[in-house]
Length: 74
Image 1 (tube, rainbow, N blue to C red):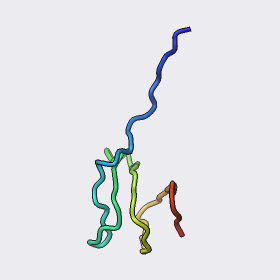
Image 2: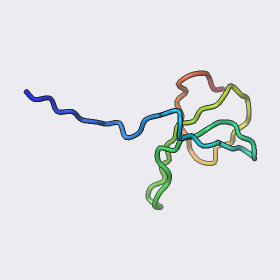
Image 3: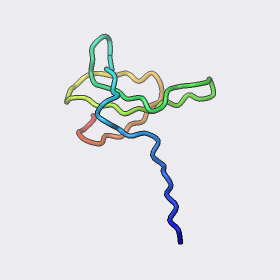
Image 4: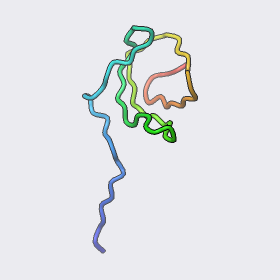
């Protein structure tokens, strides 16, 4: 049987490619967009976000879901 290689990875989280993530004019982390909003029928955005340990208030404008890979969120 010949092995068929399939690839499901569409992007990799390299150290480069992150942009500053700002809240009220202050950089609180870095973000790397994987998918931005497109047409009106495509409201999904997906990104990788990283930061140093910090505490701040963040009000969600829309529904959001996130997974903490390292660290904690309260």
